[in-house]
Image (cartoon, rainbow, N blue to C red; front, side, top):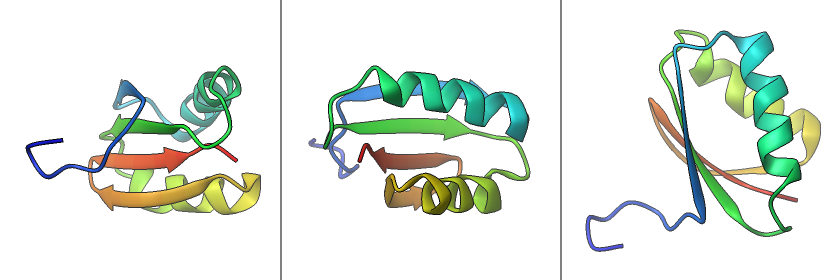
Length: 76
């Protein structure tokens, strides 16, 4: 990408969606993606900087880059 942001295959703006709803929707969105594909997530919820990396660690997906409010998650 010419603007210096990491490559991604899909993008989702979750806005200020809270952790519970966010991780449920995130799970569904990643389920529909092929292994190795990257989702760029935008999440402005104040807990996202801690919640997103923790969720990735629990589920086995890779957090390849983060720059709050943006997170790049590679599907396992």
